[in-house]
Length: 133
Image 1 (cartoon, helix red, strand yellow):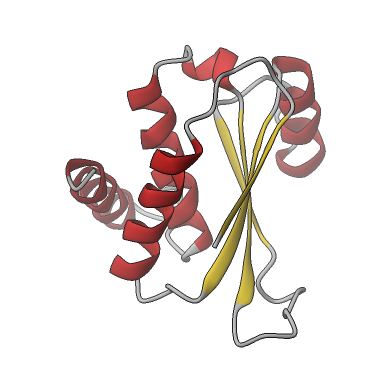
Image 2 (spheres, rainbow, N blue to C red):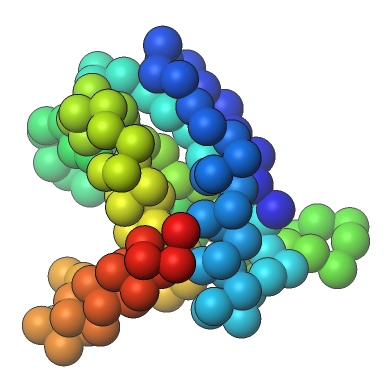
């Protein structure tokens, strides 16, 4: 369900991140999906943000929907990858969990940049899932 790759010195609580992923994916009826989570430094996330979003600055989280590109040989499929920069998030576990939920919701099709209504819906779902932790 969740593969974690930590390329930083940030201490990762894999158990809670797996629990969060499971709760959000079940809540979004995507429990058979697989997600990759990568923790990177400021330089790397800035490069990714510039390459994929044309924004030349560091950000807290990026989501890459890869579901159309990868089908696993099992019944499960690969939803995508979430990249988080703990330095930008300020290394608070609570905030890491919030941006992780935010990233999972992006992979499930939510986009807060489309409209105010969708932004409000996404924010409400983020809060709902965060409160379930």
